Image 1 (cartoon, rainbow, N blue to C red):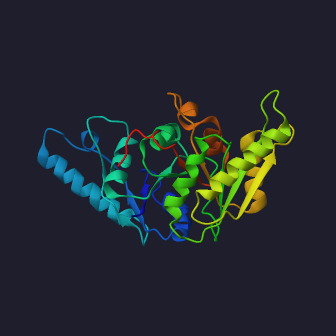
Image 2: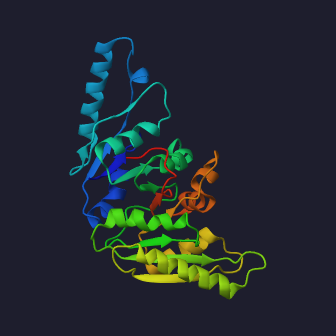
Image 3: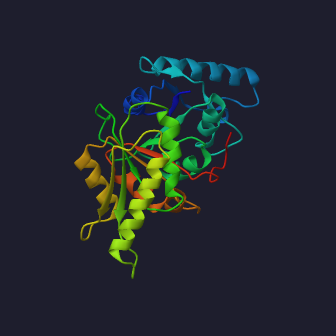
Length: 277
């Protein structure tokens, strides 16, 4: 069991550094992989050439890893499949407890929704506004909008925590629907947070229903609360169902990915995965 980091070709240090605080807090080792495309790096019709390129890529992976991070082998790209698929397959094969990706730019920025839906484990992601490794100790802010899909974050966090003493605060941003009474909406959200807490292995460090301020979007309210409580990570479940990124990932998750200085922990609702164990 480990957190598997998918290293981009241009920057092999930022993602492992970003994942280290979470790995330490959850008492998990870090492993790393990188994409290997035989068709791009060798002559696929020449087995000896493929073998030589594979050996060179494995040596390069081992050489570029920061101390304390073990190589998990290469993520082999088969038959022109999308680049996000091989790391998901390796995460399943290696029994990783979480998959970490650097989504600060393409292709991961546009493909994160597909990764979350395909991976049967939570996905740790840093986006374009990532501000650097989280301070110690880790403090997770878990989001809910009261929906059954959002509740999937609780079992995902429980699978990561497994007894680790990491404080988790629960948050719902209250934005009543047209015609809905504010008090009823907030009571429903409070009940959803209480249900979410019961799915965690230990009591939450806090539960908070926060009304959005005037002209404040839900993602902006989430980031404001995260700053107020000193959160180091934001955890949520995607609602995505469509083809476009915002519908695969969910509009709130997409906005947070693009604007949050904090890493995200994202999962899909049970039964929403395209792959599983």
